[in-house]
Length: 177
Image (cartoon, rainbow, N blue to C red; front, side, top):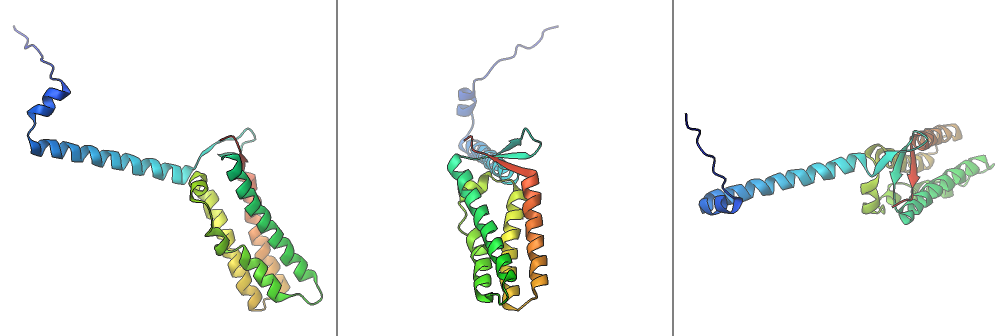
């Protein structure tokens, strides 16, 4: 019994054997596959971010030192705004206009200035918590304008700080990149 001998055809020979239609079809398929792989990789990093498991069990977000400093500065700005609102509530005659401006300053307007390169490195749950805090600060500013009671305003602030605490329990930054 004779076994047919396999002949190997190089990729170049195969390419030359194809007619123009098959070549365009193959190139289109390759382009589509590359596009799908690119979108999948982008989606993966959009959801997961640039993270690793931290030594303390939290998710470590890998950032360049300047990126880490920028995010921490934003967090300090939020904390100072919360402190200013609480101090305002403690006054005998709270300056509602100042409290409203303080809350509004750290609302969605602040989030709109976020650096896209940094946002791409953050995991999706982190981004969702951060955006919800900015939205809630705008809602707090609206509540102050509507003259909500100090108790209601404190409840709103409590909801915000609970998310801050939860986020700090889940994540930490590393300035290694």
